[in-house]
Image 1: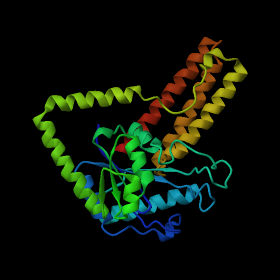
Image 2: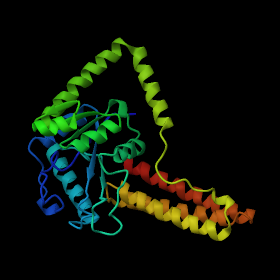
Image 3: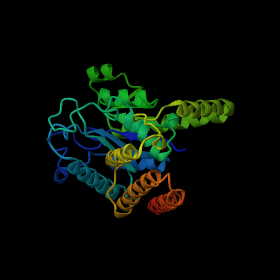
Image 4: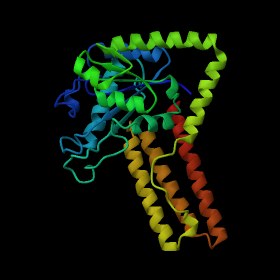
Length: 306
């Protein structure tokens, strides 16, 4: 498992203003590409975790958010000379005071809750014990703290620092990187001098991760439900999977879209298999089809990672 740097977007990577939802006006803050390049060279994976409540408030759409993230990635990659400098973009479009139906509610991904960080750690197999959160607001710091990360507030505002109570403060992302690399080197030296303590920390981290429940409502086993109820639940599961994929997506490449499509088809075929439990031969055929589609999904994603 590898460490990551979780980055807020607005005010940390790009200006925090009314143009934040317009891809035509995306501008990267001074010094950001060089700072991110140093983090990548040091072995950190870079992940953006950003609240985008403007979707709920009707200021822009999820498509606009995706377009902004694509533009941010392109500009930073052009400046760093790397491919996918920022590996993933996670965002939460919900807000309890929104005006757009379907988005006007609280959500476990919305900072100061740690949902985006926890989801990224699960998706990307990240070591949160060695990871950091860098942001410019108290809610960023609170989310990082709740996820067990070390935190850096990019601000010199005394009132904001007092409210956020971060582990460290920095005047810029470049200064934050200096702090991260300095403590990374000190921690590596300490682990080298106390190897047994390092093993104990990793064991505690694994135990903690194993004890953390996954989000989502509990569902009755499909096999115990009637035919019509099983079909209803299968459709509900498919809808929930689509919603989860929309929230987790960070890239819109053709390979990833193809993987999503095959995965959804595999879920539908698996649901049909359960509807045929009374006919063993048909059940086996549909189950085999679902397994094959799942294998295709895994193969596509492996190609995407390479």
